[in-house]
Length: 116
Length: 115
Image 1 (spheres, chains in turn purple, blue):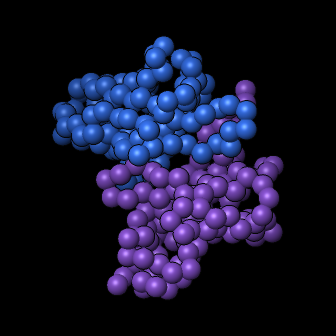
Image 2: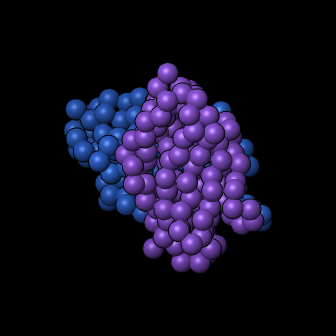
């Protein structure tokens, strides 16, 4: 079965500093990887995805993620954090369940706190 | 705005009761997914429908059921509610057409509190 792991429950970073939120994956076959963000009392918002191609994927709100096959990682990054980036971040992997259908399996989430 | 609409946003009820959560997918999306988000279990996949037919079941309790109607809206029915059913219930949709790469679009969720 496919799975993702987010090893950090919380990441703290000062505003203006670079941020990294870690994600590792375990899949059979080619991975389809995703990052989502959840603000308080809101639904999950899609940030970016890796399907194939360049290992550096750019997404919404200035976020990017680096796919590393040898390390089975898909870390989320941003060069300069904003206080408004404070939220819960989820890494996800696509898992097929036959008939051409699939679902997303989510990690436990990492809470990002950006301090002024 | 993802285009996925969920009602109600908040619901408070008592143990043993039954509730229905409703979801309207994005225009044109045939697939609807239901997820449960709780503090101790994280985001758990419950069930998926495609064009009115159930396609996959995840960690969905027998007390829970769902359906997708001809107009593609979906309902999640939760019965004999227990305290542990208190959670955020999300609906998500996406296109399953050729070239679709799999991201889901989530609604704002329905927060269920069972007292």
